[in-house]
Length: 234
Ligand code: PGA
Image (tube, rainbow, N blue to C red; front, side):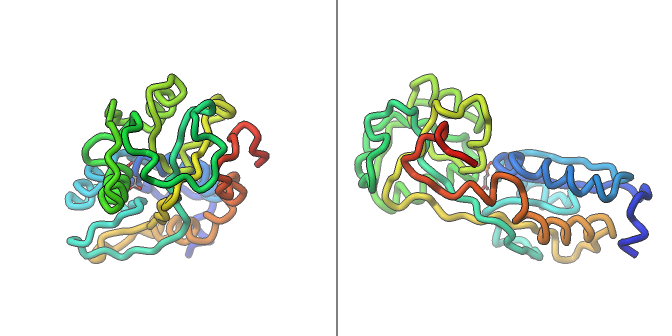
């Protein structure tokens, strides 16, 4: 049945993903569409809270996020690591240091994602656990804007390592080797348990599970804390 899909137009795949997943999902979709060129795709990129709302409203076939909600009956599978790392400008005084105590971040000007962001939830949980008070200088609703703000000298932040693939920032930013980082999150693909998946959604789900290890960059982006991204060969 799946073989019959190849080359034929069978309708539409509706995907909802959190903001940090947009750095790899389109590439996977590209490979998928090469095999199944007839499929239309609607890809919604939102933050964690908005994605949960979309789930409640049954708006998409499949969802990709790293913190699936516990109050919804879901069928959920992990498929890829999603490390959250401390990102600073390359000339930050702590750049290049090894095993920086988390307390050293106290008082650092910090750029925080907006309310409703899953990244923010994870970061706040870790800082609360180790009683670290950073100085939130600015809140931004975009990972791209946060990277620009770090490059502009406004502070440090914690971002999914997957956000660090933008070529133009290579060399300007660095990952700080801070204790208790990276925060080890994983990507999950999930759908409402009671939902009968379309053949297209089912096919994409299998494709994602089988192919996410081959996503260029992700396989080679081993965490190299303290290494200038500009020097990273990969
Ligand atoms: P965010 O979600 O884009 O809301 O920060 C990321 C995540 O859930 O991992």
